[in-house]
Length: 352
Image (cartoon, rainbow, N blue to C red; front, side, top):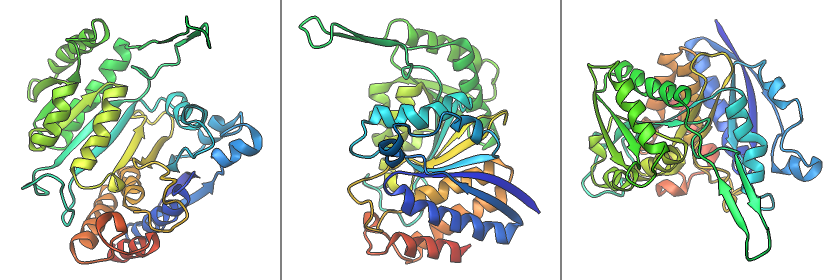
């Protein structure tokens, strides 16, 4: 029997409500497919920041390195600026663990209501691969003359050959592995004069290694429009840190609800643990009400199992989510129902 040692970080807001449902479904899949878990919970959060001045302890990263993977709920809550909470927890984990791929499946589950007229689950099924360690989200920059009429802020983007090539190769390998046909590059080389032409050059170079796959590229502005107008055009979309972030939120919204969207922060070489989290964030407006949709967390658990080679168990979790949604099972308010977080989690676990 396989055993996974998992670090659990509920974090903030609805993270504390959806994490238990994610664990419940992981355990249901584990019981069926012979997977055991050892869960260790950490209280790293904005609440901890208020108490100690730190989102996590100084040796937090070293603690996490002893685990197979990290199961994260959400980060951020009113009272702590977002740049403080993210740069105090989420971003250091992504960078120091070399989780350079942020993978987000964009899929409309059967039973979902699509905001796009005439679209079905057959039309929306692709991946966004986001570069997760560099690009526009660098720490290089600063401010001068604060509080004066000469005040200036500068933020530097960083694109390296190592960073661009490895995330692009991951996107091509994903396309090939999943039996899809085309990799699309998100760019803006008509307006951003240095980094985006470089991105385009590297995409062209890497694509030559995969002559069996089709490619195309769009500037980010028209690409966002085509996510809405033509979601069926896409198989795998690869983008920089900023562009990938934007696209991977738009994608699940087009598919029906950002609440169901999972994500994986992956170190493909498995040198360090990868981290799995829902896209929806801490949702402070509904935190504590017990009505948050747990599917994003549950699906992230499926991605965790897939990462560790348990494809059958991962598929069973996604199939169970779809069966409950499409089969008249309980639905949380964001899906048009009145069910609680626990109700939906129980139904998915039972479906497995």
